[in-house]
Length: 506
Image (cartoon, rainbow, N blue to C red; front, side, top):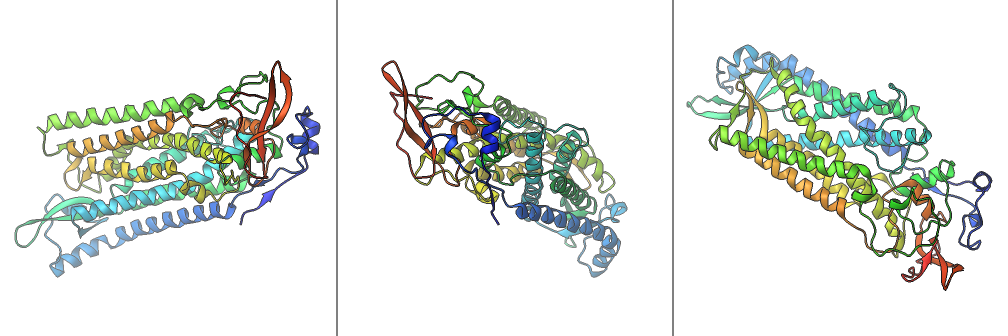
């Protein structure tokens, strides 16, 4: 259920000692309340519970495989439905089961597993990012609504949103994606007719590792959930900004109605002309350039690696780096996969910053539309309503699935690299890089100053908080020479007139 908080501005006015601006209809002085959506706390809790149950289920599956594996092999062998295993597999029948499975079916299941990892890690990550956000706010270090949660930490090494917890979240996410590609190890067995047929080896280790990592994230999420006070679970930057104003972490600074996020550190308050084109997120957030460079760098690395393997194999087959018989070597092999895959996991995590900044800007810029900007919003609706966020959510399991096809473990053979699939992965990362670059360099059109979820900028631009806000021209003030100084701001009374391009605003 959505709920709202509001409180009298008397204490805020006493603390801030605002200078009266324009007239009572356009200033903060005219406000009686500051509403903000407290968000759906139950939805966050539901995500943690789902992840915890999913983790427990996979741990149980792993234990069950270990228990039934010897009898399963002997029973299927006696029935004649199980091909006779080669000698390389016979020492390893304990802890594994064999199932007939085509390559296409195995690939489809691996894609579904990657999607499940994304769902679970997004659910726990939502709690982690929200609790981190308010932990940073209480320390006075929250600048943007969106943050790189694995690289931003509150003070205290072992705090619920501190460096240790962030490291555990990162390691568990990498391990979960790595094990999702080793649930079904391909193997070829000879049937009674002497033909090799595709089977899959299922070890008890991947489900147990995967389940344990998801359980770890859920437990860390529960600890943060119940130990860090959260003012709003909404992911909207408008709810975050209004909550911060409500609790006096930030304040409205007058005469800055035309200063975008790129001018937030400019202390001048002199009137300025509106700009018909706003800055991009690339020029508004110092980390965006690093993210864009990282994605293009990863794409280049996979193109080089794919070309190297392609040359080593003369354009066909696969490169075998060593022999290994699961499950004795599966833990070691999965660890190597995780180390190789970690750069992809970190890259995709960093991409969240770019899409989140764009999403936050879209939410704010709706104030110039007929519908207006609505601070209140269900987190799921906020995500689904952003094509950038949806695009990245789709890209995450697909990129990890492409990696599982490019670099894999095969039962009885070892650690394999497939050159064509490595190039497919490189192409996938290039497409992601193009997508992220386009989002990062996009310049929003219109005179409404860009904020990209920068909280102090939003507090400066909004002079009337409401559940539905409209931004535009609000009135005239004094004159500077022959030009009248005008004011732009927000209201809840419907769409405002557009600002004048030939006018100056403060």
